[in-house]
Length: 362
Ligand SMILES: NC(=O)c1ccc[n+]([C@@H]2O[C@H](COP(=O)([O-])OP(=O)(O)OC[C@H]3O[C@@H](n4cnc5c(N)ncnc54)[C@H](OP(=O)(O)O)[C@@H]3O)[C@@H](O)[C@H]2O)c1
Image 1 (cartoon, rainbow, N blue to C red):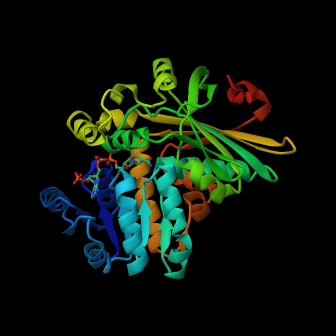
Image 2 (cartoon, rainbow, N blue to C red; image 1 turned 120 degrees about the vertical axis):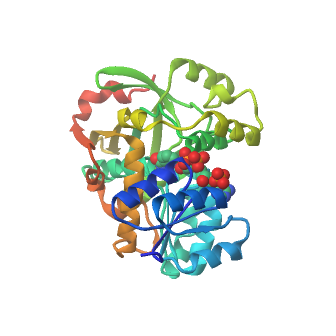
């Protein structure tokens, strides 16, 4: 069916995986991007239809979206692409999905929720690993505690990066860290807090890194205090505390454009074999003011495969009319057990009293 789903940014690293998974699963989305030669070559190879347009001119974007029921935006950094596509979706009555994980961009998308609901449009951003998997873990934990008020999430294993992930990190370098406190977003320095977190028996150093959950978790769970962490090597923590930046490798050159081009030249993204070996481990805990707690661990193998499959599955459910209009987070749309739709994902509840060390501040 060619007028159902448009995949924008289809020839990027993640977009290509999404297009491949779609074909493997018998779907026929239309592919799109701003560079004709790239999108033509990809569409020809996969036997799919295509469109070429940039996001520069709102009328052009609207003209191209008009005929589609939904668009899946795989073009990042989302700070440049989510705004124009969300705007066009609200105007044309097209449902919108993306793989965003940036707090400020998610907040901007959420701000369009009421308008989207009025227009009968679903805005379902962040259907990749971060946020879909972590949003589902947060919702699972929140379901076990009465009136949960605090959420702590820590992620280990973001070792293999695609070009867009690195570019999004560069995009975030100019921005400080962010946590949610009493319902409000609070700006904090990068690497604000440090904790030791155990993963499979190995203690690792984790620092506050803003994941999309700082934005989505309060919608998904009602929790008003959210801190998200990632494990990083000790040398990176030292550099971060000196410079308050996340990627010491890139700190020498503050000119984003030049860095983005450098990324294109040197970061090709993990190979299929590397992807197959990748593993993301997530620890989460919620607590209430009365001291009630719940904790769980989630393992997601082959994380890019998860992201691509989740993107297509989410789009399918939106097209089937399973998701409400307006702004919706993945866990709100599909429930906490959505993660089990994907190969190899495991979730284990753990005793929070045995995890004291895990959540103790250093
Ligand atoms: N949520 C998750 O778990 C998850 C996982 C992986 C990736 N991601 C995110 O997904 C995004 C893409 O990652 P990637 O590795 O696929 O990146 P990539 O290989 O650099 O591809 C990015 C794609 O976006 C297009 N694009 C970028 N800026 C654009 C703009 N202003 N207008 C139109 N098209 C634009 C690029 O087209 P050109 O070549 O024409 O520039 C390219 O097709 C990133 O934001 C990344 O953080 C999320």
